[in-house]
Length: 369
Image (tube, rainbow, N blue to C red; front, side):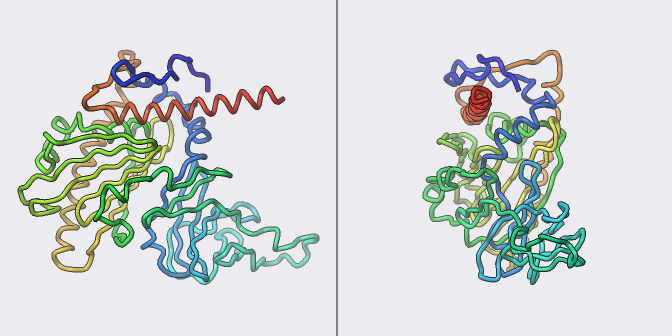
Protein backbone atom coordinates (compact mmCIF):
# COMPACT_ATOMS: atom_id res chain seq x y z
CA UNK A 1 0.00 0.00 0.00
CA UNK A 2 1.09 3.55 -0.74
CA UNK A 3 0.00 6.41 1.49
CA UNK A 4 0.27 10.16 1.29
CA UNK A 5 2.79 11.11 3.97
CA UNK A 6 0.49 13.81 5.29
CA UNK A 7 -2.21 11.18 5.93
CA UNK A 8 0.20 9.26 8.16
CA UNK A 9 1.07 12.25 10.35
CA UNK A 10 -0.25 12.07 13.90
CA UNK A 11 -1.52 15.50 14.89
CA UNK A 12 -2.91 16.70 18.23
CA UNK A 13 -6.57 15.90 18.70
CA UNK A 14 -7.77 19.50 18.38
CA UNK A 15 -6.09 19.87 14.96
CA UNK A 16 -6.35 16.32 13.64
CA UNK A 17 -8.45 15.02 10.77
CA UNK A 18 -9.99 11.55 10.66
CA UNK A 19 -8.32 8.92 8.51
CA UNK A 20 -9.18 9.05 4.78
CA UNK A 21 -12.34 7.34 3.58
CA UNK A 22 -10.43 5.07 1.20
CA UNK A 23 -8.78 3.40 4.21
CA UNK A 24 -12.27 2.01 4.86
CA UNK A 25 -13.27 1.30 1.26
CA UNK A 26 -10.16 0.21 -0.69
CA UNK A 27 -10.20 -3.61 -1.15
CA UNK A 28 -6.37 -3.67 -0.99
CA UNK A 29 -6.45 -2.52 2.64
CA UNK A 30 -7.74 -5.87 3.84
CA UNK A 31 -4.61 -7.83 2.86
CA UNK A 32 -2.35 -4.97 3.93
CA UNK A 33 -3.85 -4.78 7.42
CA UNK A 34 -3.72 -8.54 7.80
CA UNK A 35 0.08 -8.43 7.45
CA UNK A 36 0.58 -5.06 9.15
CA UNK A 37 -1.67 -5.45 12.18
CA UNK A 38 -3.36 -8.81 12.68
CA UNK A 39 -0.26 -10.91 12.00
CA UNK A 40 1.56 -8.99 14.73
CA UNK A 41 -0.91 -8.42 17.58
CA UNK A 42 -2.43 -10.52 20.34
CA UNK A 43 -5.78 -11.97 19.30
CA UNK A 44 -8.42 -13.22 21.72
CA UNK A 45 -9.54 -16.85 21.56
CA UNK A 46 -11.69 -17.59 24.62
CA UNK A 47 -11.95 -17.57 28.42
CA UNK A 48 -10.10 -20.36 30.26
CA UNK A 49 -13.40 -21.64 31.65
CA UNK A 50 -14.08 -23.11 28.18
CA UNK A 51 -10.91 -25.23 28.37
CA UNK A 52 -10.94 -26.64 31.88
CA UNK A 53 -10.01 -30.28 31.20
CA UNK A 54 -7.48 -32.21 29.09
CA UNK A 55 -8.71 -32.50 25.52
CA UNK A 56 -10.88 -29.40 25.67
CA UNK A 57 -10.10 -27.25 22.64
CA UNK A 58 -11.17 -24.08 20.84
CA UNK A 59 -10.73 -23.01 17.23
CA UNK A 60 -10.12 -19.47 15.99
CA UNK A 61 -9.15 -17.53 12.89
CA UNK A 62 -6.24 -15.11 13.18
CA UNK A 63 -5.31 -13.04 10.12
CA UNK A 64 -7.02 -15.73 7.99
CA UNK A 65 -4.92 -18.43 9.65
CA UNK A 66 -6.79 -21.29 11.37
CA UNK A 67 -5.62 -21.69 14.97
CA UNK A 68 -6.31 -24.32 17.61
CA UNK A 69 -5.90 -23.98 21.39
CA UNK A 70 -5.97 -27.20 23.42
CA UNK A 71 -5.55 -28.26 27.05
CA UNK A 72 -2.89 -31.00 27.08
CA UNK A 73 -2.75 -34.21 29.07
CA UNK A 74 -0.31 -32.44 31.38
CA UNK A 75 -2.84 -29.66 32.05
CA UNK A 76 -0.98 -27.03 30.04
CA UNK A 77 -2.60 -24.89 27.37
CA UNK A 78 -0.95 -24.85 23.94
CA UNK A 79 -1.76 -23.19 20.63
CA UNK A 80 -1.05 -24.56 17.16
CA UNK A 81 -1.91 -23.74 13.60
CA UNK A 82 -5.06 -25.78 12.98
CA UNK A 83 -3.41 -27.32 9.94
CA UNK A 84 -2.41 -30.93 9.39
CA UNK A 85 1.18 -31.36 8.20
CA UNK A 86 0.09 -33.86 5.55
CA UNK A 87 -1.93 -31.75 3.08
CA UNK A 88 -3.28 -28.84 5.10
CA UNK A 89 -6.48 -30.41 6.39
CA UNK A 90 -8.22 -29.15 9.55
CA UNK A 91 -7.40 -30.74 12.87
CA UNK A 92 -10.64 -29.42 14.37
CA UNK A 93 -13.59 -27.69 12.74
CA UNK A 94 -15.33 -26.57 15.95
CA UNK A 95 -14.75 -26.25 19.69
CA UNK A 96 -14.77 -29.54 21.57
CA UNK A 97 -14.36 -31.20 24.95
CA UNK A 98 -12.36 -34.06 26.39
CA UNK A 99 -10.84 -35.61 23.26
CA UNK A 100 -8.02 -38.09 23.83
CA UNK A 101 -6.13 -37.10 20.68
CA UNK A 102 -6.32 -34.65 17.78
CA UNK A 103 -7.22 -36.14 14.41
CA UNK A 104 -7.16 -34.47 11.01
CA UNK A 105 -10.63 -34.41 9.50
CA UNK A 106 -9.22 -34.96 5.98
CA UNK A 107 -7.05 -38.11 6.04
CA UNK A 108 -7.01 -39.11 9.70
CA UNK A 109 -3.48 -38.21 10.75
CA UNK A 110 -3.48 -38.27 14.54
CA UNK A 111 -1.62 -35.98 16.93
CA UNK A 112 -1.22 -36.03 20.69
CA UNK A 113 -2.75 -33.20 22.72
CA UNK A 114 0.79 -31.82 22.89
CA UNK A 115 1.00 -31.60 19.09
CA UNK A 116 3.24 -34.61 18.34
CA UNK A 117 2.39 -36.71 15.30
CA UNK A 118 1.35 -40.16 16.48
CA UNK A 119 -0.70 -42.00 13.84
CA UNK A 120 -0.16 -41.96 10.06
CA UNK A 121 -2.57 -44.29 8.19
CA UNK A 122 -1.24 -46.10 5.12
CA UNK A 123 2.23 -44.52 5.19
CA UNK A 124 4.32 -47.67 5.66
CA UNK A 125 5.86 -47.50 2.18
CA UNK A 126 6.77 -43.81 2.29
CA UNK A 127 10.55 -43.42 2.43
CA UNK A 128 12.69 -41.02 4.47
CA UNK A 129 9.70 -40.03 6.64
CA UNK A 130 10.14 -39.31 10.35
CA UNK A 131 7.03 -38.50 12.41
CA UNK A 132 9.13 -36.28 14.67
CA UNK A 133 9.52 -33.84 11.79
CA UNK A 134 5.78 -33.42 11.24
CA UNK A 135 4.29 -32.26 14.51
CA UNK A 136 1.78 -29.44 14.62
CA UNK A 137 3.31 -25.97 14.22
CA UNK A 138 3.07 -24.03 17.51
CA UNK A 139 1.68 -20.52 17.96
CA UNK A 140 2.52 -18.08 20.76
CA UNK A 141 -0.04 -18.24 23.57
CA UNK A 142 -0.49 -16.15 26.71
CA UNK A 143 -3.20 -15.55 29.30
CA UNK A 144 -4.35 -12.35 30.97
CA UNK A 145 -6.89 -12.49 33.82
CA UNK A 146 -8.39 -15.73 32.53
CA UNK A 147 -8.54 -14.66 28.87
CA UNK A 148 -6.55 -16.67 26.31
CA UNK A 149 -4.72 -14.90 23.47
CA UNK A 150 -2.51 -16.01 20.59
CA UNK A 151 -0.01 -14.12 18.46
CA UNK A 152 1.39 -15.20 15.07
CA UNK A 153 4.46 -12.97 15.30
CA UNK A 154 7.77 -14.73 15.95
CA UNK A 155 8.77 -12.39 18.79
CA UNK A 156 5.65 -10.59 20.02
CA UNK A 157 5.65 -7.90 22.67
CA UNK A 158 4.46 -9.25 26.05
CA UNK A 159 0.69 -9.52 26.35
CA UNK A 160 0.82 -7.87 29.78
CA UNK A 161 2.11 -4.68 28.15
CA UNK A 162 -1.18 -4.25 26.29
CA UNK A 163 -3.34 -4.78 29.41
CA UNK A 164 -1.24 -3.10 32.06
CA UNK A 165 -3.34 -1.42 34.74
CA UNK A 166 -6.76 -2.79 33.80
CA UNK A 167 -7.04 -5.36 36.59
CA UNK A 168 -6.14 -2.74 39.16
CA UNK A 169 -8.64 -0.25 37.76
CA UNK A 170 -11.65 -2.58 37.86
CA UNK A 171 -10.81 -3.99 41.34
CA UNK A 172 -12.57 -5.60 43.22
CA UNK A 173 -14.15 -7.01 40.05
CA UNK A 174 -12.24 -10.05 38.78
CA UNK A 175 -12.55 -11.60 35.34
CA UNK A 176 -10.77 -14.94 35.78
CA UNK A 177 -13.37 -16.54 38.13
CA UNK A 178 -16.21 -15.82 35.69
CA UNK A 179 -17.71 -18.62 33.63
CA UNK A 180 -18.31 -18.62 29.90
CA UNK A 181 -22.02 -18.83 29.10
CA UNK A 182 -22.72 -18.16 25.43
CA UNK A 183 -21.27 -16.94 22.14
CA UNK A 184 -23.27 -14.75 19.74
CA UNK A 185 -21.95 -13.80 16.29
CA UNK A 186 -22.98 -10.89 14.09
CA UNK A 187 -21.90 -10.26 10.49
CA UNK A 188 -21.90 -6.56 9.67
CA UNK A 189 -21.74 -4.89 6.25
CA UNK A 190 -19.01 -2.43 7.13
CA UNK A 191 -15.25 -2.20 7.38
CA UNK A 192 -13.92 -3.39 10.75
CA UNK A 193 -12.57 0.09 11.54
CA UNK A 194 -16.05 1.61 11.15
CA UNK A 195 -17.28 -0.75 13.86
CA UNK A 196 -14.33 0.08 16.13
CA UNK A 197 -14.71 3.84 15.60
CA UNK A 198 -18.36 3.57 16.58
CA UNK A 199 -17.52 1.64 19.75
CA UNK A 200 -14.96 4.20 20.84
CA UNK A 201 -17.22 7.17 21.48
CA UNK A 202 -20.31 7.97 23.46
CA UNK A 203 -21.06 10.91 21.16
CA UNK A 204 -23.70 8.87 19.32
CA UNK A 205 -25.43 7.41 22.39
CA UNK A 206 -28.32 9.92 22.70
CA UNK A 207 -29.09 9.57 19.00
CA UNK A 208 -28.57 5.83 18.42
CA UNK A 209 -29.04 4.30 21.89
CA UNK A 210 -31.59 6.35 23.86
CA UNK A 211 -32.42 3.36 26.09
CA UNK A 212 -28.75 2.85 26.94
CA UNK A 213 -28.58 6.47 28.08
CA UNK A 214 -31.19 5.59 30.70
CA UNK A 215 -28.93 2.86 32.07
CA UNK A 216 -25.76 4.98 32.17
CA UNK A 217 -25.26 8.30 33.93
CA UNK A 218 -24.45 10.01 30.64
CA UNK A 219 -23.58 13.33 32.32
CA UNK A 220 -20.62 11.57 33.99
CA UNK A 221 -19.57 9.53 30.94
CA UNK A 222 -15.78 9.85 30.56
CA UNK A 223 -13.09 8.56 28.19
CA UNK A 224 -9.42 7.97 28.98
CA UNK A 225 -6.59 6.77 26.74
CA UNK A 226 -3.49 4.74 27.57
CA UNK A 227 -0.64 3.29 25.52
CA UNK A 228 -2.51 0.45 23.82
CA UNK A 229 -6.05 0.78 25.11
CA UNK A 230 -8.78 3.25 25.93
CA UNK A 231 -11.46 3.24 28.60
CA UNK A 232 -14.96 4.65 28.52
CA UNK A 233 -16.69 4.53 31.88
CA UNK A 234 -19.81 5.76 33.57
CA UNK A 235 -21.67 5.19 36.81
CA UNK A 236 -24.82 3.13 36.37
CA UNK A 237 -27.93 5.16 37.12
CA UNK A 238 -29.29 4.73 40.66
CA UNK A 239 -32.61 3.40 39.42
CA UNK A 240 -32.98 -0.38 39.58
CA UNK A 241 -32.04 -2.01 36.28
CA UNK A 242 -31.10 -5.37 34.80
CA UNK A 243 -27.48 -5.17 35.99
CA UNK A 244 -27.65 -3.82 39.50
CA UNK A 245 -30.00 -2.16 41.96
CA UNK A 246 -28.51 1.29 42.24
CA UNK A 247 -24.75 0.72 42.38
CA UNK A 248 -21.80 0.02 40.16
CA UNK A 249 -19.80 1.28 37.22
CA UNK A 250 -19.83 0.33 33.55
CA UNK A 251 -16.33 -0.11 32.12
CA UNK A 252 -15.89 -0.25 28.34
CA UNK A 253 -12.30 -1.12 27.40
CA UNK A 254 -10.97 -1.22 23.87
CA UNK A 255 -7.57 -2.92 23.42
CA UNK A 256 -5.80 -2.38 20.11
CA UNK A 257 -6.47 -3.49 17.49
CA UNK A 258 -9.87 -5.22 17.70
CA UNK A 259 -10.87 -6.37 21.19
CA UNK A 260 -13.41 -4.99 23.67
CA UNK A 261 -14.11 -5.72 27.34
CA UNK A 262 -17.57 -4.61 28.47
CA UNK A 263 -17.56 -5.01 32.23
CA UNK A 264 -20.55 -4.54 34.49
CA UNK A 265 -21.23 -5.92 37.98
CA UNK A 266 -21.31 -9.72 37.75
CA UNK A 267 -20.89 -9.76 33.96
CA UNK A 268 -18.15 -9.65 31.32
CA UNK A 269 -18.97 -9.34 27.64
CA UNK A 270 -16.05 -9.58 25.21
CA UNK A 271 -16.25 -8.39 21.60
CA UNK A 272 -13.78 -9.50 18.95
CA UNK A 273 -13.98 -7.68 15.59
CA UNK A 274 -12.68 -9.73 12.66
CA UNK A 275 -12.24 -8.29 9.14
CA UNK A 276 -13.91 -10.42 6.48
CA UNK A 277 -13.30 -8.07 3.56
CA UNK A 278 -12.85 -4.34 3.00
CA UNK A 279 -16.56 -3.79 3.63
CA UNK A 280 -17.58 -6.68 5.91
CA UNK A 281 -16.64 -7.70 9.42
CA UNK A 282 -17.69 -10.30 11.96
CA UNK A 283 -18.20 -9.39 15.62
CA UNK A 284 -17.96 -12.25 18.12
CA UNK A 285 -19.66 -11.63 21.46
CA UNK A 286 -18.78 -13.93 24.38
CA UNK A 287 -20.86 -13.63 27.56
CA UNK A 288 -19.42 -14.52 30.97
CA UNK A 289 -21.03 -14.33 34.42
CA UNK A 290 -20.18 -14.89 38.06
CA UNK A 291 -23.38 -16.91 38.53
CA UNK A 292 -24.99 -18.92 35.75
CA UNK A 293 -26.94 -21.46 37.82
CA UNK A 294 -29.39 -19.76 40.18
CA UNK A 295 -32.92 -18.91 39.06
CA UNK A 296 -32.31 -15.20 39.63
CA UNK A 297 -29.08 -15.37 37.62
CA UNK A 298 -30.76 -17.13 34.69
CA UNK A 299 -33.41 -14.40 34.54
CA UNK A 300 -30.73 -11.67 34.58
CA UNK A 301 -28.74 -13.46 31.87
CA UNK A 302 -31.81 -13.74 29.66
CA UNK A 303 -32.51 -10.02 30.13
CA UNK A 304 -28.86 -9.16 29.44
CA UNK A 305 -28.78 -11.16 26.19
CA UNK A 306 -31.98 -9.56 24.92
CA UNK A 307 -30.91 -6.05 25.89
CA UNK A 308 -27.43 -6.46 24.39
CA UNK A 309 -28.87 -7.84 21.16
CA UNK A 310 -31.14 -4.78 20.88
CA UNK A 311 -28.19 -2.40 21.35
CA UNK A 312 -26.08 -4.37 18.91
CA UNK A 313 -28.67 -4.14 16.16
CA UNK A 314 -28.80 -0.38 16.70
CA UNK A 315 -25.01 -0.28 16.20
CA UNK A 316 -25.15 -2.52 13.14
CA UNK A 317 -27.72 -0.30 11.48
CA UNK A 318 -25.74 2.92 11.96
CA UNK A 319 -22.39 1.32 11.03
CA UNK A 320 -23.79 0.00 7.77
CA UNK A 321 -25.13 3.46 6.95
CA UNK A 322 -21.70 4.96 7.72
CA UNK A 323 -20.00 2.51 5.36
CA UNK A 324 -22.27 3.74 2.57
CA UNK A 325 -21.44 7.33 3.47
CA UNK A 326 -17.71 6.63 3.35
CA UNK A 327 -18.17 5.22 -0.16
CA UNK A 328 -19.94 8.34 -1.35
CA UNK A 329 -18.43 11.22 -3.32
CA UNK A 330 -19.40 13.58 -0.50
CA UNK A 331 -16.86 12.42 2.08
CA UNK A 332 -13.08 12.15 2.32
CA UNK A 333 -12.07 13.19 5.85
CA UNK A 334 -13.74 14.65 8.92
CA UNK A 335 -12.75 16.25 12.24
CA UNK A 336 -12.86 15.10 15.88
CA UNK A 337 -14.87 16.33 18.83
CA UNK A 338 -12.18 17.03 21.44
CA UNK A 339 -14.68 16.40 24.21
CA UNK A 340 -16.15 13.14 22.89
CA UNK A 341 -13.85 11.47 20.34
CA UNK A 342 -10.40 11.26 21.93
CA UNK A 343 -10.51 7.44 21.91
CA UNK A 344 -11.29 7.40 18.16
CA UNK A 345 -8.30 9.68 17.57
CA UNK A 346 -6.17 7.41 19.79
CA UNK A 347 -7.17 4.31 17.79
CA UNK A 348 -6.56 5.96 14.44
CA UNK A 349 -3.15 7.21 15.65
CA UNK A 350 -2.18 3.64 16.56
CA UNK A 351 -3.26 2.53 13.09
CA UNK A 352 -0.96 5.12 11.54
CA UNK A 353 1.89 3.96 13.79
CA UNK A 354 1.52 0.37 12.60
CA UNK A 355 1.17 1.42 8.98
CA UNK A 356 4.36 3.47 9.21
CA UNK A 357 6.23 0.57 10.82
CA UNK A 358 5.23 -1.61 7.90
CA UNK A 359 6.46 0.98 5.40
CA UNK A 360 9.76 1.24 7.27
CA UNK A 361 10.25 -2.55 7.21
CA UNK A 362 9.41 -2.61 3.50
CA UNK A 363 11.95 0.14 2.77
CA UNK A 364 14.66 -1.69 4.69
CA UNK A 365 13.99 -4.88 2.72
CA UNK A 366 14.31 -2.98 -0.56
CA UNK A 367 17.60 -1.41 0.55
CA UNK A 368 19.03 -4.76 1.65
CA UNK A 369 18.30 -6.19 -1.81
